[in-house]
Image (tube, rainbow over all chains, first blue to last red; front, side):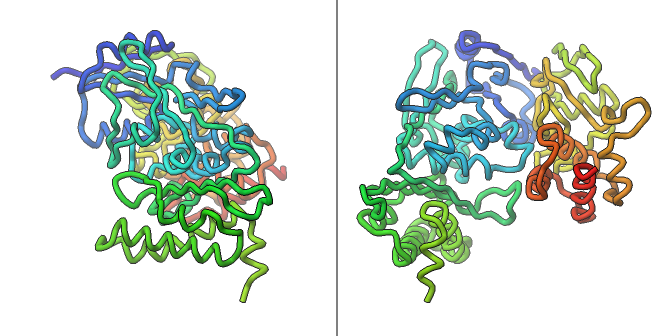
Length: 295
Length: 151
């Protein structure tokens, strides 16, 4: 029997050389926290693994005037501890800091989270709310930029070609008028796979009290995370109040009903999503709104 | 495949299989049996080692990915015949019950202390959140780590 081959490119040029020869039995390895388990479970002992972990140029977070460029191999730990991501897009920082455990965050990468395309991938909902772009390179050395929706197919599959690798995630630097937060519910705090996760990004008006634009993305309610127009419409033009919190909860429940009615997880999720709504609401607007207006 | 790396301060050049995990090489090639195989999927933390200063589950790292890296296992904690303060504290506080999770707990806490010598209780809990103790001895384990900080 043919055995597994591992290639270890140390630069982007070497990666392109490896991708040139990629076929349907080629696997891209970054942190390994999903792939290694998956290969062993599926008893894959042949084919080719391209180990990206030696490509140091993909391990940086770079700041430009309008964008932050996150290298494909940037780990969840690096994102959790990065001041620029905290400043310009806290929802992503919160998502990465809630992935798995310390050990998993030390290895798991942002590109791996996207390419693995799990329905409950934690970084996907925040990235979907912003106009994040995924930059890829292929075996011909061609670079492409795509929306996250055009990369994640869902249920563990992606739309990338066999000779394509993610090299960078580009996120816009959002100004002070933007607020973002991520929330997640699982069966326990650590090493938990989200039963529901979601991110909300809002643009406030000049008074800072009213929502001008809203972007909401929910995960683990289908094969992949999706933007929820129902919830977004319920937030736009509204002032921050206790009523808004109730509207948020109700619209989320409406969305859950639409997405998974009839599934065994439906009764649990339509109830549990209120807890997630509360976490996100407090992260966005502070806990004062909910406390002061108690009945 | 040829793997060059450092384990517990010693340089090694080993011939490894492409599908060997770091866990397999440490246990089977180097005989470092403190590295335990539990769940084999990064959930239980029993196989935790320190790689370039960060705690990682060695069951989710391909051996070849450790090329050029520095690995520390429990065997590397003891210096000149004397146990590390953390190990002594685990013993003193009765933080070891059946013992299976202990190496992983030690390495996760050691990685934390190497990075942050004065962590809060919350930071200790977060550092060992990926380590399961089925004897449920968490209180004593956390106490053992805290004792090292307080000296």
